[in-house]
Image (cartoon, rainbow, N blue to C red; front, side, top):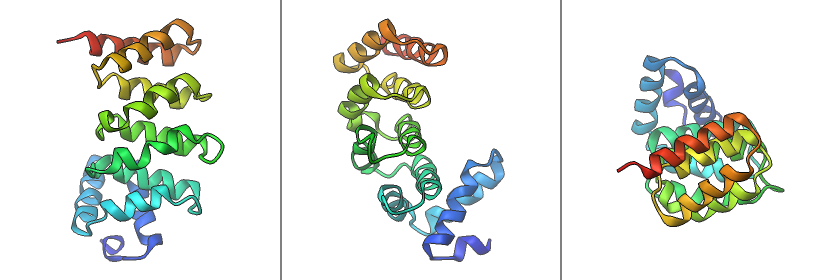
Length: 168
């Protein structure tokens, strides 16, 4: 309750961190509090803040995933392709968010990242996000990665993506 009233960045960080706890009632309460605070834009800004601690950015992306702001995909997609400036946990959180936040707006970054991403954790979510898209580019990216992917968990997500893309 008290966290929901804290308007500071630290308060927002703590509130968003609660979304990473597997407790449905707690998550519902946190999401309600974030909505009440109109926190979508501040969370998106926090996720993009390269000076913010990695955990704060990952937590903010959990909030973005939950609140699904309309402009989120286009704003966070560039984080996927900037491997030198963006840490693996942040890229993983971005890819995870794009599984539920308008993957179509980030298609180019998703396709490019699937080819170049070194982390299997990130590629796993990239494949799932691309599975939401039925465009020729998304299907081609998944099919191409299926031919070269070595990680078994990522292969599974690519196979699921391909099945979803071919389903009516």
